[in-house]
Length: 437
Image (cartoon, rainbow, N blue to C red; front, top):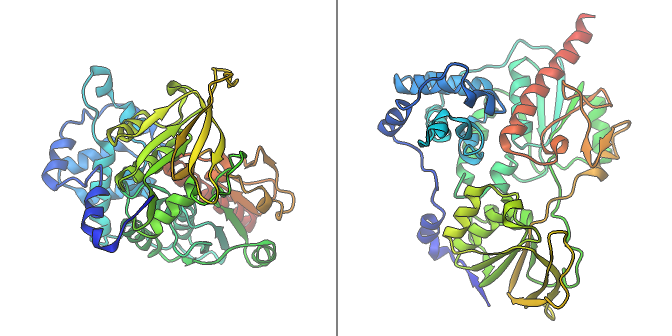
């Protein structure tokens, strides 16, 4: 049995998927900012992959200079708004806050960051403009956070930039991958519009293949790869092709694209215990499903952040550890998942097989790396499916630079932003040193 979320449920959906971290009001931001100790050699700065001067922007909020605060953030991280809301601040900047050592609540850095940047975006306050023209052209493949950060920085440096995005909308994870109760479609598009106003072009519905790649190499002076990861990995067990089996990334993509107006099962099993698995768990729970998470390792070994798991438990998700799926049961559509208990060495325990009835399964066991795409690029070195780069994010094919998931295998939005920004500076050095030599 499945449950269809109809258009008439719009208000209910809005309530269920409302922000878990709402934007602060002005007085709330001032009060929270006043708690900051403005540490010398602040550990929160070192914990931020983009090295935002966090005490500075918080001090600016406290002194009611919100515009200046936004500029401090955007100078280091042009996607500061989304990073303030979708990134795991609990284990990054807030996790490093000295208040933790005092058994006190850390400063809500993420929410303060979102407050200041939202202010600038809503008022369309512009801090940066296109740099002096260099006559250099750069193609950015992938319009996610890394690609947008790279395009913005390159444009500031005076280069002509075109972003090629295969999806109908740019934004990558922020548009299609993160849970909607963290960041909405509307917010993602507002942020993209704000960033792109500096003067670079975004071409959506534009998939790059071997032929078009060859054309880009002729037309552009450098190319930045920010293509992320591919489809969800297969489970490689019988019954995987039955109706009702979904890859987690594809499911979340559809959920975001259709703004939560989708059909879900009544009893759902999520296989895996990473952050994507937990996002899918919470999302389907909010849509009314009973969700069971199946994971072959122990609770301590799950890759999802503790606060994400706690959120899933609040939504009544059930967790089954040391459990391996061995077959998906059903005739034409999913009817159940056959599992076996395993020990710490992942060895099956004889006679421990059991079946969990369900009408939908979401597989969240990682995503494919884009190895087939990389084969189209001459001389490009990869290792374990990841592109090898130097300190300037330049690949073994000197015309190509790369960053984000295709380099680190899949981390946070803020890591991709950091890569994109620094790769842009590396591209600028590479191109302009050739000009001056």
